[in-house]
Length: 333
Image (cartoon, rainbow, N blue to C red; front, top):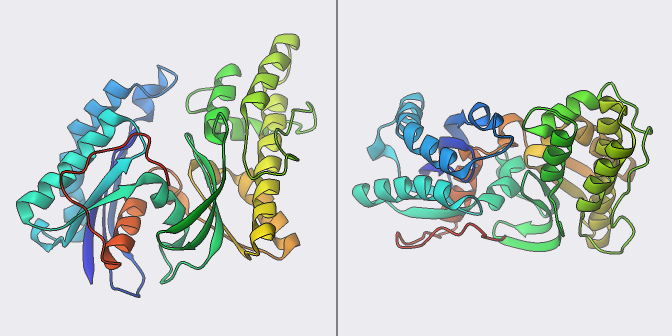
């Protein structure tokens, strides 16, 4: 059995979690604390790196103590420490990784470097004892990844975005529509009252024969539409944009499952919280007789529980990392 303290500070959420797991058993989340910075960055319309890293530094110590208190465990009861080492904002990554390494060094306990994207990738299976082979779609603010997962640590990238990630497109279109930051949840709200057929936006790369994505052209199409139609309904534009993104995500993922023979699809990342996205996948997967699993609630957005689970999976497989390893803002999966 191992007790893992994880820190996530890749962007604008500071998070600490403590998990416990036995080899071959299910992981148990003993504590998961998250301090969001959305309100601090909202007035700037996006994340300000300097502000983000300073906020991480100010609240991290409190979150560590709160997590230990919630888990009812002392620092000596932690068997291994871990942190997100990338991808993300360099100044933010340094805060969390340095703290985790310091605790590892002082306590003489192992350290595990965690890939933020692997955290998302495995998050739908936190409550499972095993991670079966499946097709994984990670849809977040900075990434749109389609992966063939054969097991923990055994991943094959099938496709990725060639330009804007789905979440990034949501935020940028939200800004065009004058909606508050972050744009994703606001577009989802507006789309509920809109007509998804009001505007025929492009489904980029839908029939190109690859598993890659592109949302830049869609974003540009929205911009031109708003310039030509000054009185266009925000709800209609939001609904039409949202359905265009969803149709591409669903179709590409289903094709990937069929081409690999996988009968399970897993969704993760902040955009997977979108109810319209979830419903579309549920309907299509049921039609295609493909099983679907999705990360739950706070496990979709950036959090330390997913980092702890990915780190525990590596640690229980006998993998640890040296303390002199560096962060990598462009780390790939």
